[in-house]
Image (cartoon, rainbow, N blue to C red; front, side, top):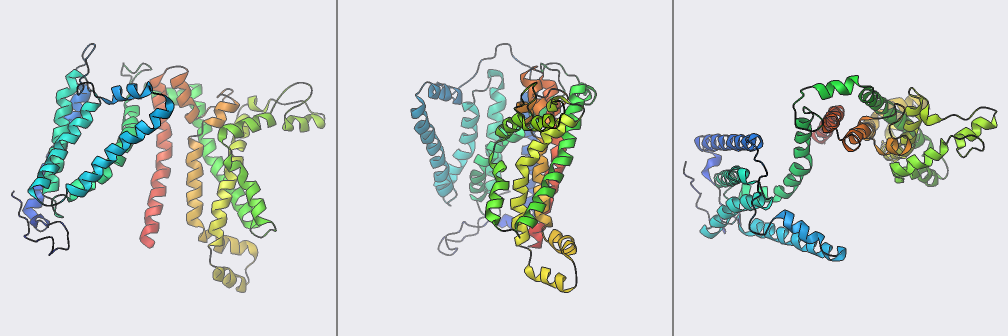
Length: 449
């Protein structure tokens, strides 16, 4: 299990790190792989022991003396706002400087740099965990996880086929982004799935009761139905109108001005668009403020409370607002894609005697297929997680709620963390196939290129 370093000086290798024999040693690679897998399994086991360890009444927190992230932010909060900015930048700069020094110097060959890597691998994880001030009953688990993670990184780096220091440098480059993803995306997702099996307080396990509520309770059922309506109609209609605009405006005079006018709603926030259209749908007796009811009463009809007409009509009225904001986005992307279709193909199709519609369906649409997929999936994902329009215009009343709104509503208004988490998981399951499909399409495009 010893590591043999090829005896090459920096002058012979052009300054590159020395190479190890483990790149060609099958036994050495197998040993490394086995130990890394075992170490990772131990880390996972310790993590679950930490999660399920018996709670302690009023547990004390352990900190590195007076230093912790909590005390730092409390100290920062007492400062004037204009002072907080340079302090945060200074702290960020110190962390970045430490990482840059380690990235530059630690991977170099030599005994001193070997020690630097070893210390960094063991000390940095422990300091990072301890700055979070773990509970007293969790300190042993935290320190064990940190030391085992550092030791595993050092061992894998030491036996790397590219040379000691390679994996260390690679992980230091990736660590900030990976930590942000772990703390801001992966951990909340896992915690949400975990909470979806507990009651509204998050204490008692209830199994699938929250998911049954989603698909049987009127509020949950309408949120699912309306979300599916949004996901089916919003991208289809937005892309249809956007593609029509892209085709016809490209041939019109004043193309730039017309595109700006169509694109302007994209620059408006969903809250702003909701307020604008709420005035459009305004309902009252007497003089009409809303344009739609003004037209209805002008022809002798009675004003209609458009946002309260159910089923589905009020949802369609909300959907119109979303389509209005997304049509310009679809138009810009598809217009650029249409301009990229080779002129030679269009000319060849015209020489073959095809009409305009045949050229559009047989040449233009296949030529912009990848852009169509991107626009459709993007707008679909945005429609699945819509919140602002529903919150501003109806507040989810009269069966207009959607998963994105109801998820927040259950958590903030009713303090029902179980129902909110179940709604979030259902929404995630709706979005996941689109993300996977989009990622696979992009991978295929890269392979073709």
